[in-house]
Image 1 (tube, rainbow, N blue to C red):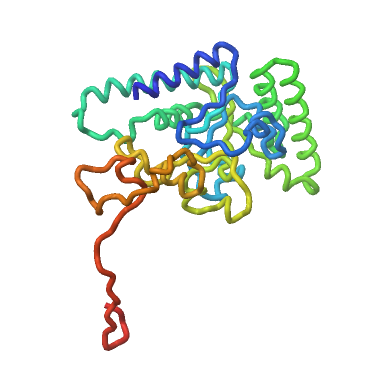
Image 2 (image 1 turned 30 degrees about the vertical axis):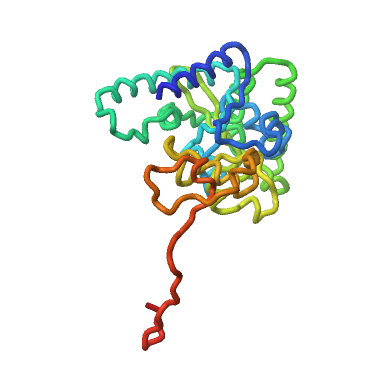
Length: 313
């Protein structure tokens, strides 16, 4: 938790100094340039490029990738990939995030030191801060039938960044949205595919939040477990080694093993692959170098016995 507080304070320092920042956990591997998605160069991401906050999610299927499901904003938000604009909205969220973690630190001090606090991490409290912020139902940047909601949303997006080049880009994005809304029969599918935003308010400050596409800013579930990107024939922008065993501080090398399987961890020396590890369940627990990437199993393989009814025993 202490590291989480320091991290978000670090974010705040940059945001207050006028910098937009794209942050990633150490267990994220970047495979493509993310700038087209965060700068509005991808049609489906026109709006998220101008939000106060854009975050990855733990979404595992396309069922959450639509307006009805709020583009994954109703599910677990994963701060492993996080875009923060230099805006009052991003700053107020970070301030509330730090304050919530500080209150949790006081609570943790009252508990036994050996109690595992798996829920007490910075991501948990980011989700709490977002979900407990007031949802502004009168702001909707792509609402098809209520122009006042679109105007309210546009007004906030214009307030985030007043630099001329950003303003020109946002104007093009908002014009594109209005064109899609004006021609629903011809452009309905394009409007539906345009990633929407939520507008919320905290301590009297409005912020817009969106999510990165789950297929391209991939979790460990979609990339390793489902092999979704490989089956569909494209490379993600980034891979976050989540949704797996062996990711605790005591056994962190499970993440590296996952990356090795997909040839995304290429820094091992030849000696890593030159020995067989000890038998199963060695004691004490092996280190990554001691285990050497291999598991030697002792035992005899036996053929299954076939019973009188033909069933295997």
